[in-house]
Structure formats: structure tokens, C-alpha cells
Image 1 (cartoon, rainbow, N blue to C red):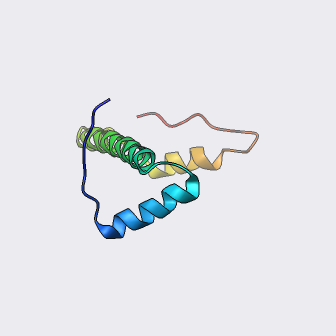
Image 2 (cartoon, rainbow, N blue to C red; image 1 turned 60 degrees about the vertical axis):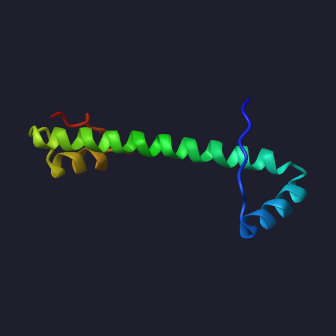
Length: 88
């Protein structure tokens, strides 16, 4: 485990101190949890961005579906005659 020091502005430190007391946790614990959540969120955003780039390349390559085919497939959900997903 590494040690990193940070300076917290009063508008962050005071609510953090109050929350730490309320939850009976240390400020260190809360800061670590916040950083973990931020890293997970960033990772998810990076993954979504890569998916977007791949989708754009697919469109450029002419790989797309007709809206009517997709809607017909979706509208068949929950019916007795569910259709197979449309293919590119």
C-alpha cells in the first residue's frame, strides 16, 4: 500500500469529516472508496467510447440494419411469435 498526501479545501474537508463521523468510518476509507468508484466509472466510460468507435467503423463499412427490421423484432418480444434478431 502506498501513501499519498492531499490537501482538501474546507468545502470538501468539512462535509467529509461529518460523513466520516456519521458512518463511523475514517476519512481515509471514504477517500479510497470515492477513488475506487471514480476509477470504475472511468473504465466504463473508456469501454463505452471504444464501443462507440467500433460502431462508427461498422457504419462506415456499411454494416447496419434497417429500422423497420429492428422494430419488428423488438415488437415481437413478449408475444407467442418472437422473431429472430435481424442480421447484418
